[in-house]
Amino acid sequence: MNDGSVVVLILIALAVSNVLPAVLVLASGRVRGQELALWFFAALFGSWLGFIAFMTVTTLDREKRSDLAKHAQLRQSRNLRVLDVSDHSAR
Image (cartoon, rainbow, N blue to C red; front, side, top):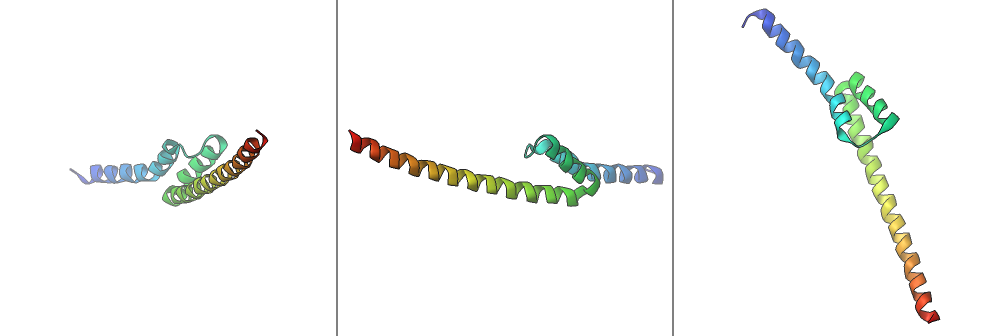
C-alpha cells in the first residue's frame, strides 16, 4: 500500500464513523416522524455526542411512558375491583 491509499482508507473510516450514529438513529425505531428527523440531524451534525443524547433522552422517555402505563393500569384495576364489589353486592 502506498501513502495515498492509506490516507483514503483513513478518510473513509472517518466518514463512516461520523455517519454511523445518524444511521443508528434511523434504525432504532425509538422515535417516529418529525422527532426522528430532529434526532437524525442531531446525530448527523453532532456525531456520537448527538447519538448519546438520543439514547439517553429516548431511554428516559421510554421509562417515563412505562411508569405512566403502570400507574394507569393500577388505577384501572382499582376501579375494576370497586365495580366488581358493588356488582356482587347488588345481586
